[in-house]
Image 1 (cartoon, rainbow, N blue to C red):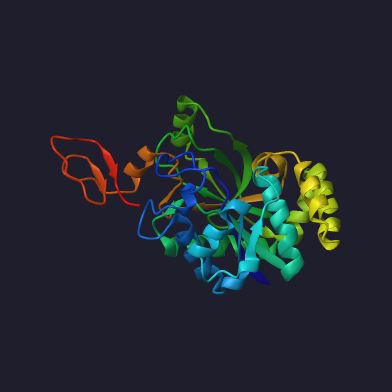
Image 2: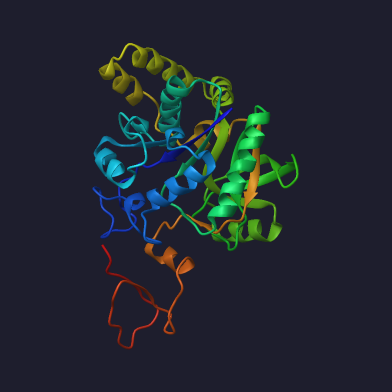
Length: 308
């Protein structure tokens, strides 16, 4: 069975202003390391698939040229352009339709954001391959949960249920971003993982899950499929805009019953703000983080970035 990677590369460029902006969202920036976060994500995906033709990127029309310039190895036909920004459920559903048309129903797909930092690529790829093996051998939807290191209010959480296989669990529930005291209780319990927004399943299992647990989205995508076959781009966009703008978590995963979580410990961070760089960069003797050249005088606890 083929293994396919889908990189989510939409975004409005708000979190790292003024370095990021509408024309240059976070995933296209080199926040950690020499390459952009998108380029790093592509490199990890290539380790898993070993074939750039089995890697896809879903993004907006305004970022197509930027994606092409940053990922010269990626076939241009593998760049999937969303008709409009409608959150992750329509984006993943639409991308899955096009991938199924191109490579067939018999494939397992790993879907991941392209704007996160991963410090240990080897462990990341091992975890993804472990999750892909589960998805291939079963009809389960699989997600990756990160073992928390602090009571984080900015992340969603996954509560682990009964053991599934070694070092895997059935998902008991998803929890949206909790208040501090609840996050602290989650951390102390040892039974909760951060939701990293990484999902793995067989395309056929995803289609069946949508039909069962998200019928409105399933029916909308079926209409889009007909217009895609007819090459009616106006109707494709119109039908896409009719889909409810929902996250894949809310639209499907919080309702489905066949979800397995694989814990991951590979140095993950979604680097959602400038302050998050404190978690991935070493500090100097004055607790400063400096990217590029800077002259620092009697300054402590700063994050300085003068790179392009």
